[in-house]
Image (cartoon, rainbow, N blue to C red; front, side):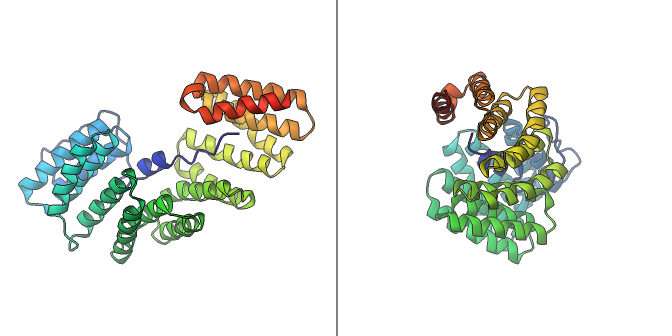
Length: 327
């Protein structure tokens, strides 16, 4: 059974600090003709949310230039901060730091939008550098600032990031729940699937499976409202997986068999493997060793197809060890 797909980096990127939710087609470009810098910033944020980081980088650079021409310091700071973040994501840390410094020099606490965006990117640079103490301080500052200025989406992002860089599971849980509270109070429902999912992952790591199931069930509610097909698939998988860990083998099968069929239709080898592994363990738990072993071996085949024998050796070694134990 694989560690649940908390997908920290994915979640951070998908539900990033933006005001826009419409996703543009990959390769989309911002048009600055007859549009304000504010409008083009919103378009650049849309491209960022589509995860086309190269195009987003180009777009944020255009926005920064347009904002300078308009003497719109707030949008310029936001765009420069995002240029820094795109460079960090794309592996150009030093270049990103140069743009982050430019954003810092132009930012001011009297500008809530620019300052909050700058803090969010600054904290991510500290996080990626391994300076978790500095990152915690920055995200804590961001949370308090955004909460005071009614920037609810960004307050949620700050709480989410504090949970990620927290020192202890207790702190992770505390800030995970604060993020959920902020999302509920600020009507930021699109955040609630990832937030509940991450909190479930924390409980999972602590082997508190009852609490994990409760959180995964809540996460599923919001993933089914707001996420795409793969998000819905894994939301169902996590509920079934946790039932299996709790020894609810019959109920686990009721969730996981449809997940397997769904994953097969999508040709998602990772999801097929995970469903087969948990179905195999459930079958063994019900006394059907032969069926369980067959499913575990199929899980191994799917993991190999996905490349986990080289890209995720922890999973690969675990499934081989488990098969050897059952044989």
